[in-house]
Image 1 (cartoon, rainbow, N blue to C red):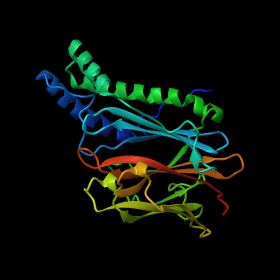
Image 2 (cartoon, rainbow, N blue to C red; image 1 turned 180 degrees about the vertical axis):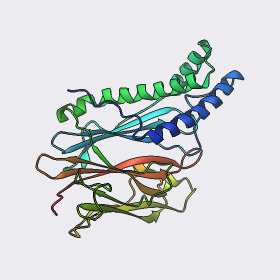
Image 3 (cartoon, rainbow, N blue to C red; image 1 turned 120 degrees about the vertical axis):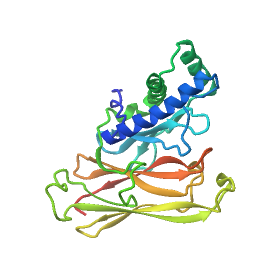
Length: 298
């Protein structure tokens, strides 16, 4: 099997600056903790912990989509990664995925000991160590998934059409507009020709044990795709129930829209939807993918 595409650590330059600043603050806390001899895990966690999503690409025929999400758990701050392979036409997982890996407390103790033994207290060096342990876990997940993804062949890069990062508050992330046509952009087009619109709506379900008596309800969502030129609508998702894997979701929004031009002229579409769920120290953010095959002529 060909190697998976190189990891795209940060989709935007602005995300790099933010990630570095946050990591520097966390590393400073970590260094101070080491200086007084307290026990720590891999990384001090923020009260609201959000995973980072990264597309690994589409299969050459456009029938499969692979992506990962990774981060550090709140509470212990252990690194984790979830790698997903999706059969778009079959609306199911690629057999052998998802792959879910998480750091252990034993690994955290070994990491802490190594820092102490090496006399590392500089926050930038500690922050680099955090990144390295997280990236090692991501590479481990790719190796575990390799046999399952081997039949897909070399993955092709996705075209990023929409990106609403977790820390951005300027956009309406429940409705986004984009063009499947590569040359149609805001720079060269003043009309809505060839523009598609995604609308996300939330609705409530009764709370279950996953809500830990913190909430009296949980939320599902629907996702509708509209061709603004023809008026054609496609319902991409409408929850009849909330899957147990989501925990007790309270909020959804569209984070990324990714496309791939298929050999037959149609497009493969992947929408990464971020949702919030109760965490140890506050709401956590995770990602799910809604996929479809779209004919731009309809």
